[in-house]
Length: 457
Image (cartoon, rainbow, N blue to C red; front, side, top):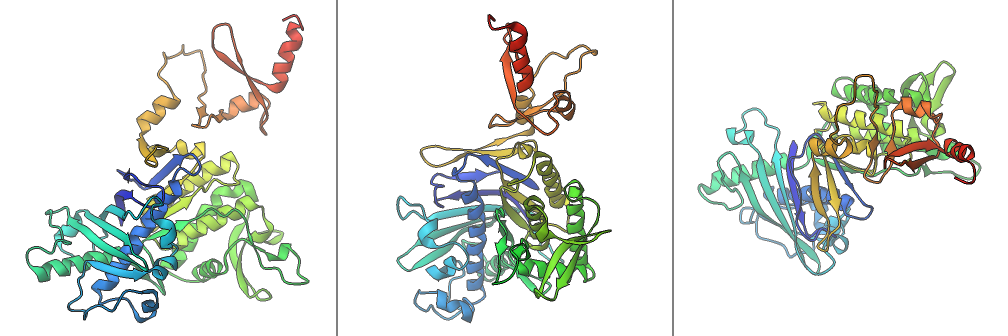
């Protein structure tokens, strides 16, 4: 599945329509804190939650274990129930991370409107129109105790037929409608039922499950228990599951400079009754829980990206706690995973890092009176604003290129950093010359400049 375009209106602070157009494999959202980047990712997840409710209706209503979350009166028999509407109690959405009291726009009872243009995975014997994208629009309206989900458009771009309108041959239209909902809904992957979209939030800390008398280090378990078990089972499996573990290990191999040589392995700790990840070295097994927070964050993120099973994954600020070079390596890993046909087909990332700015095109969110506005910065625009056109220097002149992020952070080439004597970072000063150009000096060079000129200068 590939999401080509997504538009939302009415979700939290997204009051005016906000549209992500021309989405690719790796998509980066930049913007100030609290501008609405996370809300935009969350709204994509809400779209698939709404689709799942509609899919349940098409199958004859919610399953028995879901009826407790539905406060609406019983509806008619399945053969009389309209396929294009679902009513669910507040608990239904709350259990999936979308409490109605939080997600609807605060200024009033405006509906949430979500529209997605999707290219679905075609299977054997599918009708030809599934070769072309589908346009799906859903509308969520909040009542006193329930939320009504309506699908207002389900259009086949191949022939323009709107399956939500129910026109033409009713039986054929309903069959096509149900088929699309099946492809948009959850799917079975091995023993698991996985959603089409997953949101991975940045891990800022490790969990602590210390009991009395145990060492604090012994309780630093960065890898959630269920995820650790999934990795352990995948390592010893065959076929596709084993391949996913191999892909995970290959991703971690990009960060050898952070951990040193060794082989990433899973082992089962019988004392703790849980699986754990670690690096097998010549000295022995080094558990992930004893490593630094940066590599812990990377390992957990890579594990979720590879093992979640979702087609589309949103990731919030993956650069947290990571040094600049590690951010670049992580960006490259995520780009490779998105290009892998066996991995998630798309990644949508929120970021404040200049490393992710250097992977244009990216989407820039800016504040306005009606909520955030979005602008797509193309590769050409990004190049022009970071590398303005200038006359070519003589062949004898070397001009290493650096990069300045939107927040004014400057990245300089390694050779310049080494020449300045700041291989491990340090303060710099920008001095404006008589010609109007600026020179970058280290703090020591700046101090020496004053000593050379004397106090009268």
